[in-house]
Image 1 (cartoon, one colour):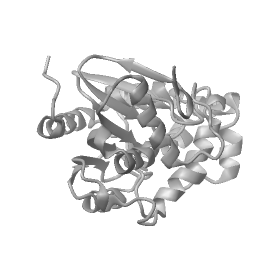
Image 2 (cartoon, helix red, strand yellow):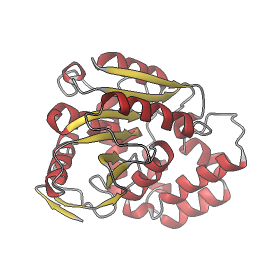
Image 3 (cartoon, helix red, strand yellow):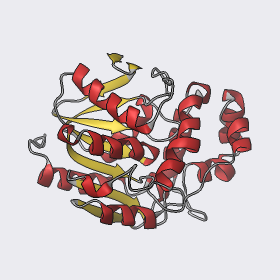
Image 4 (spheres, one colour):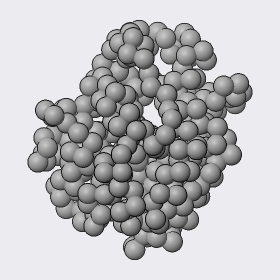
Length: 281
């Protein structure tokens, strides 16, 4: 737990080497940040996974905004005596990762956006579904336990009709189970679904001046992602001057079956861009 200018921020810190800020997606927290980093980031980094506002251990401040969340990352790095870090934004975490790169460019040595929310078309969960399933731990648990192939798969961004291997089924269950208790994540999730994500999907240039981001950036996107659409990710990579796109041939929002490919792509990008890259073990 760190005390910052924006209140308490819960975080996990694992590993050694060059610091990396792993920013979780919707319905996550520091625990999800570690899980996603474990799937997509190779060894040799010091991974710092904070809970965003409204997620476990990090209260939602009054009049919270994505820009405020970005400023809180800078305050967290100050508290940890870290001058600069790689920033990895997962899914809905891309909004504050982008704002961090815009507002604090000197603190970001490289920017990686994995299955990012980006301007364009995108699904938004109806409020009745959110109210029923994401405010009750028991209802959520019963739903993803008893009906996960029908409901859990779409929630996790599994492409329609995709046949999952036993390992992929286990990964989907692991991600869905990591959301428990959902009651501890409801404030942050509500902000993501109804404020942060729509704000980025429909972002005016004044709110997200992508052209001002000079940090080397990598956008990772599966072509069949039904949640964070690939066409949006491709357009985002074209708007950031020093960005390139890693298009993944399948796997949906969770990049199922492609984690090793993504790890290699991110590792290669960081070897080329980070001023002091971690040495392989």
